[in-house]
Image (cartoon, rainbow, N blue to C red):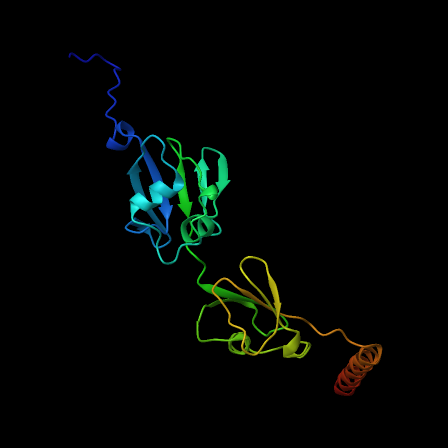
Length: 211
């Protein structure tokens, strides 16, 4: 076939020639693109659903976040409850898959957030041996205006709030909140008096030096 000036030659990839679905994230046997992303392509057959595709792919990885998974269909995002579907086998949570869909299974967050009245609030590496006290110590301990440890709360990744218990287990993705202590009127007055005293002492020192 002769070619002419400004002709366009299109060489399609094998993915374009096949009907495939893309699996992204914590999928068994997926190819790592970088440290945070893995992908796997599977052929799409008539009648395929999320369950049949994941089963055919080899299953989910051990770090799969079953609650935040979804189907990406163009600009649309369709939530998936993979815990109900793949663990409890509640097949009414299954969904059909279409050509061009991507099934996204995020990795679980392997960290714990510590907020509130601690010296260094932030995100810390998850340690399965730690309890609330150890995580608070990792964050520098409680600040001077923190309430007692019994007022601490543990917020799970699903949004459930639990009050402090010495033997309470902390899971990856949880948030520990240490509430600040509210000052009484007497304490507030004492702080104001202390602040004024410091200012007066500083002014007197500066005046004596300047003489």
